Amino acid sequence: MTSSLSLAQARRIALAAQGFADAPHARPTMRTFERTLARTGVLQIDSVNVLQRAHYMPLYARMGPYDVDLLHRAAQSRPRRVLEYWAHVAAFMPVDLWPLMQHRMARAHLDAWGGPRSIAEENPALVKDVLDDVRRHGPRSAREIDADLTGGLDRAKEHWGWNWSEVKKALEYLFYAGEITVAARNGQFERLYDVPERVVPAAILDAPTPEPAEAHRELVRRAARSHGVASEQCLRDYYRMGVAETRAALGDLVDAGELEPVRVEGWSRPAYLHRDARVPRRIAAATLLSPFDPIVWERARTEALFDFRYRIEIYVPAPQRVHGYYVLPFLLGERLAARVDLKADRAGRRLLVLGAFAEPTAPAHTAEALAAELRRLAGWLELDDVSVRGNGDLAPALAAAL
Image 1 (cartoon, rainbow, N blue to C red):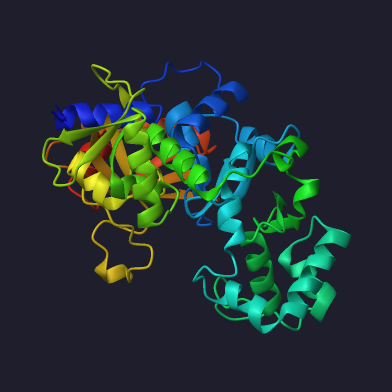
Image 2: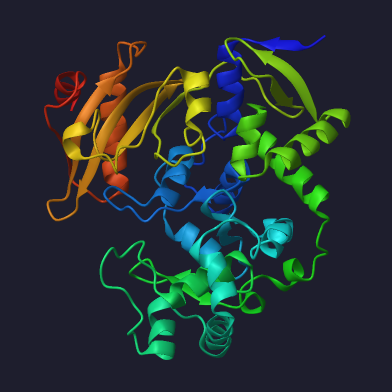
């Protein structure tokens, strides 16, 4: 007989699996970082810097104010603890995921990934030249490699983020294929490419490559551990896997007793509970979540767990936005109680609240709790003040609380 979970139990399981039930450390250390990374599994990377870049925020949400140099050291110094790869989308991942991504790297020439894949077919000589340049000169930015090979003439000037040069396409293909990796990021947040043997720890490079089915099982296992309880779709999305490979791995893990099929109140899809999942009596969180936090990045899961419909509106024209440009959900206890549109005014040293909106089930103390969290966030960002604009039903109470 299939076990059942209430929606409240499922929420607490999910939040505990993501680290929100962990005892706080007075001063976050590398041990805190490693514990947090073990919970999230990956840190999605995004370059938008209107508040703080996305990969720093899940650590803040779970660890509190911390020195961002922890992530820089983990990603750029020995012993290297994280690497960049397409683990969810572009993300920091633990170094021990490198062997588990080999099957994905081996399919780089087959995966339908547009320009980066086609460049290997259309211009293999350029791909070889790019790889040779990285071998000779890395760590190297795309601009530097472009200058080496084309004098910079190949670099498109318009639509900067997407209108890639041929060299950039070759770099993205080689990165996806695992023939190059990222040694660091420079001050402009550009990747500095190098070959894996100078970046990936030798013990990881020398580790045996698992068979694809074994890698799929381990990725689903890790996704299940990070979710606590999840549908097949949730598990598939975590490491962006295919339907057939996820389903096969899921069946194996259920047969092995690592996952238990369960019913979750209100969910139309079957769910799976990890055997090590905790069911805490309460979650005492009060923190803001990045739009790219694992708690909210799979929007259907967010709605099913929290009754919170969430869409990022960065690419929506300003007059058509409902809540704002860079809107963060506010986790209070075990609920997403509000959402705020935030911007760091670094020149004026202020955290700007451009909009604040309460959810229908927000508790009475939401404004006071959010005010305290905004002060904490501002302090972490080295901003001196919090300024509330008038947009949103929560804005007046929030301004008063501040």
